[in-house]
Length: 429
Image (cartoon, rainbow, N blue to C red; front, side, top):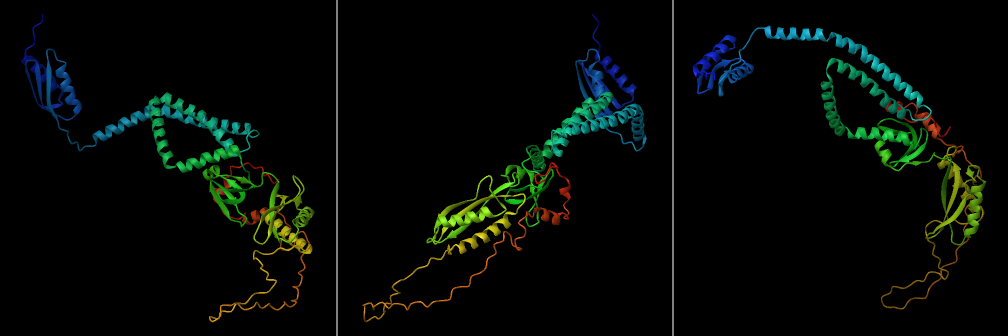
């Protein structure tokens, strides 16, 4: 068996090594029963740790008490900075081949991704009408092509782990951004779903979210409507997707109704026939899918209320103009047929006159009724000649005025209107 080294021999061995490095000042090494005590100072934590490891690896050392203090030295020279710059330049020169490879592969990957995207868009041009949906599918197919090129560059450069770390950080950032801009993301997803479902097209007259108008365009944020007054209305796509959509232009035939009140003394059947004949003879009223109907709607306080239903071509005619023309003709026909159209005021008739009662406090007996004098013959009001034309000059030609409103509103400067995600097909064409 080898003899156990004495404590003083261990201390001298470690002390000589530490002094030989030149990293330590005021070095003092002592050993007692195999426990080594290190004293002194150094400039870095690495040197302090190195001294402790040296003592621990020395033969017959049971434990190490490291009391070396770290005292950083202030260096006022530019040598450390120059060394770092020199090392950075060496790394840059060593990375030149990788940079050249990236400059070749990344453009090729981008070009290949663009080519795949255009090919996908062309292949879907007949199957998918929405340009926005085609664009989303094309980008979904082309992005992996570019990512393959980026992966090759990172793999050759040995930065695969860095790429994974960046992707993980990007995922966290994406979640944070998603919460911050959830309304924008919601509108974008709604525009995508609306492009797939296509509940309306450009030029359709719709009602959604309490607003009515002709669809002008749809972008990734909102849907643009043009009202009858020529106002542009922008509705967020999320609200459009969640609301009930009434598409008045989905079919050409539309049903509308008129309300007319006649007197109780008039014949309901006769009034129904007069109104039905006026509707049936009008050129704008369709006989298909159903002939005009005149139904009793309710019994009012002074009138019997009738409701007349009719169909017309919503693409060719304006509902407001047709209602005006038909109400005018119905009123003329009822007056010529002798059918009264009283107002809501109730008429009370006293055939025996109105009794007069004395308020004399001395007598409680009522005086005898005094009949009113018979009414004098008042001249009848002059009859007003009503036009029997299907459309007057005030009503225009009854045509749908949507196109004229669009022409006048075409000069409006709306930047978002240029980004149209709707299909180019127009139902009115």
